[in-house]
Length: 495
Image (cartoon, rainbow, N blue to C red; front, side):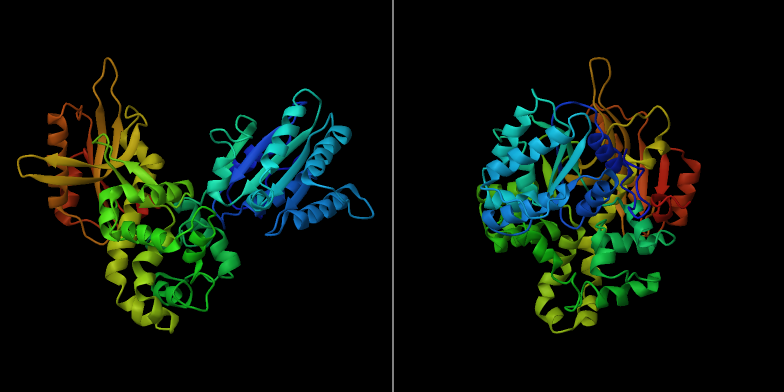
């Protein structure tokens, strides 16, 4: 019986419960699970804790030839079974047959957990391995087996392809778990900075919710106070002596499908600098829009880039970098790389703060506000608002021939008896004290949405700010219940 989540595993309650449920399933047939996630997310840490609790078999693959990996696998199986000498397999066909047979013989009436970590390394050396796993999984659908096999890996394009289209393992998995970064509130707790939302937001804008960065990379070097953020940044991320200095480059280089890093860095740089449409990206890097379809698709498959639909305009979308450290690298570090390598971190940072606010912290703050509305923020709209879709979009004003950017919106799709409705539209400003002008722009957008046929009868207007609100705006909010003011304390649940 697997015990509750160990205390040393931070958060991950949902992931742990899913893995425990899979590992302890009472089905008499072979069960297969896929665990993926970008590097540094703590997948191996989580799976090792699970194996320790369940007493299963764990094999961590390395970058090696198929023959060397087979010897390492045989040694691991021998250690698991208590054999006095390593088990020698002729090929991977025999190895998979033995492993599944072992589970069937010894654990036909009891689950046996098997974890193969860094599975993409094996697939690269032994391309037929997914087919061999598929054969054994299919075989033990008609014969009794307690095997609960988890295949884990960080190469998102490889792991995503295991269950896609005509892949051998398509339709065979009973679990597909993606281990994602900590959300901004959990990240603040993990770093121990939740008491200071201003510090927590800046830290998250640089490093996101990647757990390995605190302990493995920085040995618990955490900014002590808000005033320590700048010195901390210079001695860690911007220092050539720090493991984080080249991490953004490594994140890109580690993806198996990326053959031309320079092109992909240019695409990411375009997005980081605000050129977030397909045409804008193409124009920035000097290519035709059709020529960047492949790199955009690869970056999406690697979970480094996300395409977000305009919530008001069908067929329109923008791209967003999902890894904050890459955004920080492309916007702040890459343009001054030579100076940073020569140890001029303080000088570079002093000249980059405005760029950080505009290209890194600002867009990141907008994403945090949308995440807030996907969670606790929805409660501000009352019990009748429903959950709806949360996103961003553009409202066109034909009178002034201008566009109003809506950073945060909550909408409900229409049906046969109800019009499409808008529950909230909001503007998010990271470094600007918001005033009545921002509210008036939102009110105009609401009028335009009403004119387009949407139901805005319950639409609230929200101002999200990283620094605060003018007295005039606070007065308006106090007088009008449809106006919501959300600052960093509210985002972090500290008000």
